[in-house]
Amino acid sequence: MITSEEKLRKQAYEAVEKNKETVQADPYRQGYHMMPPVGLLNDPNGWIQWRGTYHMFFQWMPFHTGHGAKYWGHYSSENLVDWKLEPIALTPGDWFDKNGCYSGSAIEHDDKLKVFYTGNVRNNQGERETYQCLAESINGNDFVKKGVKAELPEGYTAHFRDPKVWKHEGKWYMVVGAQTLERQGAVALLESEDLEIWTHKGELAGPVEGLGYMWECPDTFELDGQGVLIFSPQGVEAQGIDFNNQYQTGYVTGELDYEAGKLNHGAFTELDRGFEFYAPQSMIDKKGRRLLVGWMGVPDQNEEHHPTIKHHWIHNLTLPRELKFINGKIHQLPIEEMKQLREEKLFEEVVGADLSKTLPRTAELEMDVDGSLSQFELHLFDYLSLTYSKETGYFTMERTSLATGNTESRSCRLIEGLQQMKVFIDHSSVEIFLNDGKEVFTSRMFAEPDERMVKVVHKGKERLKLTAWQLRNDAIDQDIHVNNI
Ligand code: FRU
Image 1: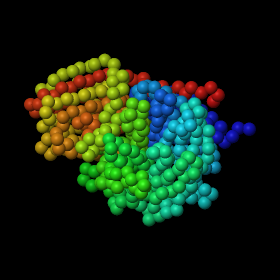
Image 2 (image 1 turned 120 degrees about the vertical axis):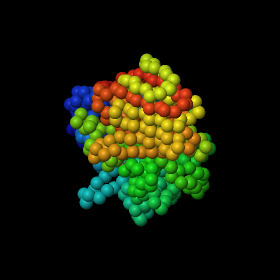
Image 3 (image 1 turned 90 degrees about the vertical axis):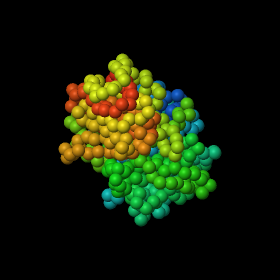
């Protein structure tokens, strides 16, 4: 007898097979960003380096390009650049996760790779139930579910999910994204000696007036001596250039007090300034780097208007970024491994006036300025415009809205001027790192597939050096290596 879990796995693999050619034929298919083999991808999950290999799991709906009962898809990599799709890690086939193996995290313990995730359930009355569950693997590929390890504590609605687990001085901790009974966002803290019995300690942070009705995907860690909490609040109102996306992602910093189970923190700062960024997750790798990957999408934000839907897939992950805490702010830097994606150097020029170039659809563009720029524009593929003015201090990204056809923009202020910029272009996305990762703009970019023109408008006197590389187009291997589908 085939179990419901086996049946669901089989159906997912069939969906991959059936749609392979349609997905592959999409000109917007990414060359070096992790994307689903078919269907919808959202949050990065279980991000870890285990026995040397990097593992990235992801929220996955194989059967259509909307949300629903999520699986955990799985990629692995030896070098953070070449990613190989692995067999499905988690399937929503048990009573405690039947409506989705929702987001969670990975740890190493007892020589095993263990993942904690949220079992999402709709009961017979149609009400939501939530269970924090464990699954483990001895080879990094096949996972055995160990069932429910923590039930919903008192004081919260069933919007209680996305466990991130870590160890500190011999004890295990879990933060969970939560909504209080007063419908405010918060982060719950749980504690365990053995990963089996979890005790609710209270709120690590929140609620905070004006910071929304639900906080998703919390991630707590120390970075260069600072206590950090990254989370994705829902229900924050836009204020000027801040909080312009449908839902936000950002962080607070302060002192992580394990005794009290509190993070005494300051104000909430957005992590990324682009149109599409949400639910990131971080981990420390064997080189001691804090590496972060996000979902290059935002829930409920024009998802139905993405043109890739025609090709039966939607969304991708961001590149991994290294986090540093510099002068009170989290910086995100492209990792050094990205250099391995470079093929040919296309040009290296000191720009004294306006300039037009063509670039391939997988490319890296670097700009260095002697001093800082007074006035600058970069137009990418007749789709995205980036402008900077020293007078106002604003750096602005503009594109045509996927939904309305109107122009939409996102901005940040660079008081210190625009000194340096790195741009990673993939077939349908762009990631822009300003001033050594002090500000980052992450966005999808659905330019006409054969559009190649890049224009720089530079009227100032400053020396501006532009370097461009062609990047590899074949870093994502989606052939699933399963023996017994
Ligand atoms: C964030 C999120 C998580 C949840 C998952 C479901 O995008 O809503 O809170 O676990 O996605 O796919």
